[in-house]
Structure formats: structure tokens, C-alpha cells
Image (tube, rainbow, N blue to C red; front, side, top):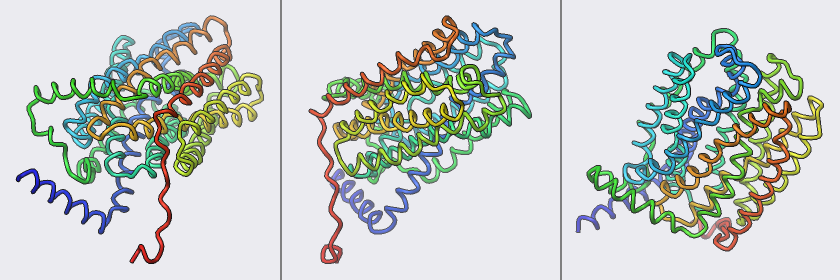
Length: 437
């Protein structure tokens, strides 16, 4: 009887929200998730623009910059991958709101500590791992909120909104953070970024709701019960059809994305002749292509409905753009071709999230998303390491590009296999005047 009463109250709340301000609240959700992921990405990619200054602090030579710098850039993804797999399932129990409040608080503290005691290399490495552990639940939480509040025909666009913060973070980091470093230091940059994280806690606390039905039921259980439940959810998620296909495709793409994006400022300076002052705009421009790619790709995906095919086409086109980047050395030509590359790189991760949301129930969303993101981004730690090691031993920052071309082609071929599991999305027809009445 109590369950029926609760279900009735939940239904009344949902109806009230639908009649009142459903669209307005959807916009609020979009803004909160965008700002949260933006804060997360600014803290993680800021190191790429700060790397030349960090190298000066540690007095690295060119070979050490490639090797030790690659470790600093890539080690974050180890903690990030572990967190996705083993901590994200807890979000299914405690809900994305509480989980994000804890996660944002913790990664802001670690960012602050990086600015204060990151002058010791071993401490810097440890803090990067801890930062990854704290940020691993960000995307699973955002995915859970999206699945709970948005119908299937809107999810590609909604996922693309908070995924676009990746591009905005990379776009803003050279425009805002490089001048900040030049005026102060890379240590102060991390302190400022920690304050941004603390500010994001306010809208999450006051405005974010887990779902139209409210917090998950298992939020009220003991920690032991929830740990047992997360174990069971993790096992059940591993049996979702196609989950390993999605994981492999995203892993291949993430290796390319992290390999190129985290080394982009260094690549532009050492391989294409840009000055450090020019990085303020040069390292930002390619991410305009990423933002446009998200907008165009997600719109096509939601309209066409066959997301596996659309995503594969973008992956193959991305491989072509890497070949062009490899053979073009003019400065403006390089920026245009990199913009094209990021245009096609943009769609795969949000579309994989959308495909996963379509084949799993809401109570498994965080567990399943954690598996895909965890394995792919854990392996993605090799991307910047491979890029840096090949550059160090060959003396060329172009040396990793042929390998990444192969990875993009392979990613497209793998995602095509998911078509057997995908249920095409049929966009609803516009309502007639009679239906509206």
C-alpha cells in the first residue's frame, strides 16, 4: 500500500512538473551539467597549457618533457578509469545529486593542493591520480540525470551539451589560463580553478534533482547493503548486450583524443612553429570545430536515429583528417585541418553514451557508463604516453599520427557492429491542432 502511495505521489509530481516547467527545468539541468563537466575538464586539461612552465620548474630537458610530461598527463586517466568502474556504481545507490556534491568538493580540494604542494614531482603524480579518482563519476552521473529527465529522441543533443564542455574547456584554457600563468604562475592557476569548483556546488545543491521520481530507493539502505547492490549491478551491467563493443570503440577513439588534445600546445610549438604567446589563440581554435561537430553530429543522430552508422561515418572522416594533419605543415592550414579533425572526433563519446542509455535500465546507467568510460579512459592513459614517447625517441611530434589514423578506422569498424543491438529512434511527428487540444 505504501509503495502505491509513493508511486501516486511521484506521478503527481511528474504531472505537475510536465504541466508547469518541464522545459524550463530541462534547461536548468543542461546548464548545471555543462558547468560541472566544464569545471572538471578545466582542472584536468589545464596541465597541458601549463606543461612548458611545469617543465621549467622541474628543469626538464626535451627528452624528459616527452617522458615525464607524458606520465603527468596520462596518469590522471588511470585513477579516472578505476573510479568509473568501481565508484560509479555507487551513484546508482545514492543518486547523482549527492554524488556530484561529494565529487566536486573532493576534486576542488585536490586541485587546490596541486597549486600549493605540486612543486614536488612525486606529490604532483599522486594528486593527478587522486584527481582522476574524484572525477570518474562525473559523466556517469550526468548520464543518469539525462536518461531520467529526457526522452530518447532528445538524448543525443542533451549528451552533446555537457560533452561540449570538453571543447569549451580546451578552448578557454589557453585563452584564460595562459595569460593567468604568465601574470602569476602555474601554481596560482590551480588555486583559481579550485575556487571555480567550489562555486559549482551552489547550483548542484539547490537546483539539481536526481529524477522526476526523486532520489533512488537504495539511498536509504546501509553502506553494506549498497556495496552489495553495486556489486550485483556491476555484474548485471557486464551482461548488457553490446557493452563491450561500445567500450572497445570508445577506447580506440579516446586514445586518439587524449593523445592529440593533451599534447596539442606542445605539438603546435615544436612541430608547427607557433610561439608560446600565439598559443593563447592557436591552441583554442581547433576546439571550435569540436563544438560545431557536436551540434551538427547530435542533430543528425537524433534526426536519422541510426546512431551507430552516423558515428562510424564520423570516425572514418576523422581518420582522413589525421592523414591531412600529418602532411600539412603550414600554420593556418594546420589549424583548419585540426579543426576538421576535432569536428569528427566530437560525436563518438556522446553517441556511445546515448546508445548505452538506450539499451540499459535507469538503475544500471551509472554502473554501465562507468564500465565503458572506465575501461576506455583507463586505456586512454596510454594515448599521451605513446604520443610523448614516440616524439621523444623519434624527435618528431608527427610520428604518432599514422598509428592514430589506424585507431580511428578501427573505432569506426567496431561501432558499426553495434547496429545489431541498436533500436533506431523514431522522432515523434509534430502535434496537430486537434491533438494539442
